[in-house]
Image (cartoon, rainbow, N blue to C red; front, top):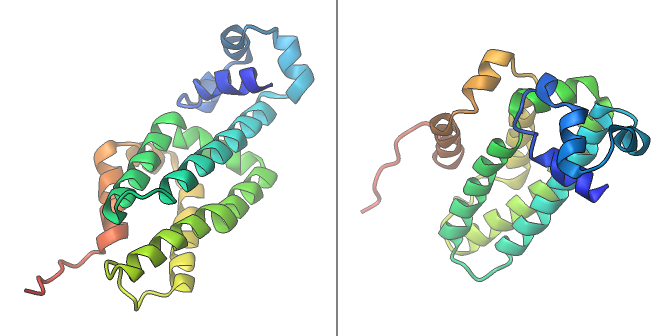
Length: 188
């Protein structure tokens, strides 16, 4: 199953209709029947692959955030990893899959709130302790903000989903997330 899911990961950048069980079987060097026996459907395989990928990326991120690298480098690395995630998973495919599968929606939301958010909060707390993150933004407010963004990503139309895949758009969103809309005055 691991080989099948790793092979499927190579195709997650494609639109949903372009991901074929025959192609996955060929990459994994197994029969299509084996894939259907293990997973039952293409959607179930994609779901298992996405969950495996999320868990893998979570562990790698957790390890990076607990390392001794400087805070600013951790922030950069975090966003580089998020951008790489967009290269791995076609957002349009992911959104379509999420809309079809309420259980996957719930798993992703739970993962976001109970794993990813906790990592982000620990990083924010580290930044606060170093005097690099504003103290007046409460964690609960940040949680609401991330929930709003997550819901927006889930409900994106196809045109917006394609637009947001562009690297410069991802950079702008990350910049808005980190620095807001207004120019910051120098405190010198």
